[in-house]
Length: 73
Image 1 (spheres, rainbow, N blue to C red):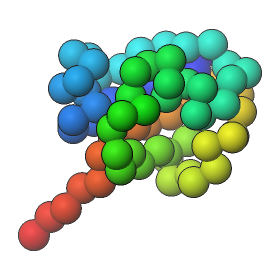
Image 2: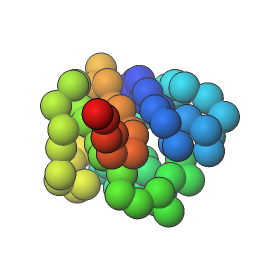
Image 3: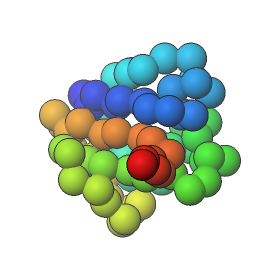
């Protein structure tokens, strides 16, 4: 099992801040299953490290965060 956290526009679109999912699929498959593929750009972090490789296979116990880019000032 993995834990997924949603932030910003992703959380707004899905109407929730977190979810659980099965391990063993790629990040791109996970994003498509969640219905977030149309949110661009989309930042993805696995275990609190930003990741670019959407073919990464999520492992049991991973924490995935999906968020739009943040800007501040």
